[in-house]
Length: 85
Image 1 (cartoon, helix red, strand yellow):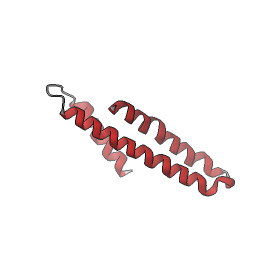
Image 2: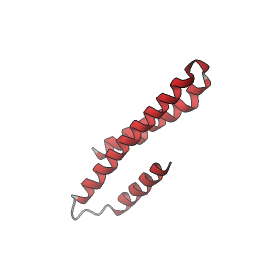
Image 3: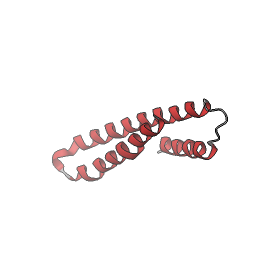
Image 4: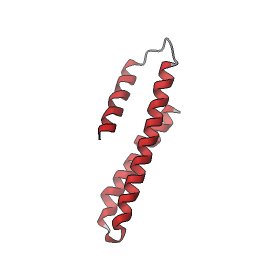
Protein backbone atom coordinates (compact mmCIF):
# COMPACT_ATOMS: atom_id res chain seq x y z
CA UNK A 1 0.00 0.00 0.00
CA UNK A 2 2.81 2.40 0.95
CA UNK A 3 4.64 1.79 -2.32
CA UNK A 4 1.54 2.01 -4.50
CA UNK A 5 0.36 5.27 -2.92
CA UNK A 6 3.78 6.88 -3.31
CA UNK A 7 4.30 5.55 -6.83
CA UNK A 8 0.97 6.98 -7.97
CA UNK A 9 1.53 10.23 -6.07
CA UNK A 10 5.16 11.12 -6.80
CA UNK A 11 5.64 9.01 -9.91
CA UNK A 12 2.45 9.69 -11.87
CA UNK A 13 0.34 12.59 -10.55
CA UNK A 14 3.16 15.03 -9.77
CA UNK A 15 4.74 14.68 -13.24
CA UNK A 16 1.30 15.04 -14.86
CA UNK A 17 0.76 18.26 -12.90
CA UNK A 18 4.15 19.54 -14.04
CA UNK A 19 3.39 18.67 -17.67
CA UNK A 20 0.02 20.44 -17.43
CA UNK A 21 1.68 23.61 -16.15
CA UNK A 22 4.51 23.43 -18.68
CA UNK A 23 2.59 22.74 -21.87
CA UNK A 24 -1.06 23.77 -21.41
CA UNK A 25 -0.34 27.38 -20.49
CA UNK A 26 0.97 27.90 -24.02
CA UNK A 27 -2.61 27.67 -25.33
CA UNK A 28 -4.60 30.89 -24.81
CA UNK A 29 -7.87 28.95 -25.02
CA UNK A 30 -6.91 26.99 -21.87
CA UNK A 31 -5.96 30.10 -19.93
CA UNK A 32 -7.54 29.63 -16.50
CA UNK A 33 -8.25 25.91 -16.88
CA UNK A 34 -4.60 24.79 -17.04
CA UNK A 35 -3.89 26.44 -13.69
CA UNK A 36 -6.84 24.78 -11.94
CA UNK A 37 -5.95 21.40 -13.46
CA UNK A 38 -2.35 21.86 -12.33
CA UNK A 39 -3.33 22.80 -8.76
CA UNK A 40 -5.86 19.96 -8.52
CA UNK A 41 -3.37 17.41 -9.79
CA UNK A 42 -0.56 18.62 -7.50
CA UNK A 43 -2.82 18.86 -4.43
CA UNK A 44 -4.22 15.37 -5.05
CA UNK A 45 -0.70 14.02 -5.47
CA UNK A 46 0.42 15.65 -2.23
CA UNK A 47 -2.56 14.25 -0.30
CA UNK A 48 -1.82 10.76 -1.65
CA UNK A 49 1.85 11.29 -0.78
CA UNK A 50 0.93 12.18 2.80
CA UNK A 51 -1.17 9.01 3.01
CA UNK A 52 1.72 6.97 1.58
CA UNK A 53 4.21 8.54 3.95
CA UNK A 54 1.94 7.97 6.95
CA UNK A 55 1.35 4.38 5.89
CA UNK A 56 5.09 3.84 5.60
CA UNK A 57 5.72 5.32 9.03
CA UNK A 58 2.99 3.13 10.55
CA UNK A 59 4.22 -0.03 8.82
CA UNK A 60 7.79 0.73 9.87
CA UNK A 61 6.85 1.18 13.52
CA UNK A 62 4.85 -2.08 13.48
CA UNK A 63 7.80 -4.09 12.16
CA UNK A 64 9.97 -4.88 15.18
CA UNK A 65 13.34 -6.35 14.37
CA UNK A 66 13.34 -5.02 10.81
CA UNK A 67 15.95 -2.31 10.21
CA UNK A 68 14.90 0.20 7.56
CA UNK A 69 16.97 3.16 8.70
CA UNK A 70 18.29 4.28 5.31
CA UNK A 71 14.93 3.92 3.55
CA UNK A 72 13.14 5.62 6.44
CA UNK A 73 15.62 8.51 6.62
CA UNK A 74 15.49 9.08 2.86
CA UNK A 75 11.67 9.01 2.98
CA UNK A 76 11.49 11.51 5.83
CA UNK A 77 14.00 13.81 4.11
CA UNK A 78 12.21 13.70 0.75
CA UNK A 79 8.82 14.21 2.38
CA UNK A 80 10.11 17.28 4.23
CA UNK A 81 11.64 18.68 1.04
CA UNK A 82 8.43 17.99 -0.89
CA UNK A 83 6.42 19.75 1.80
CA UNK A 84 8.70 22.78 1.68
CA UNK A 85 8.40 22.89 -2.10
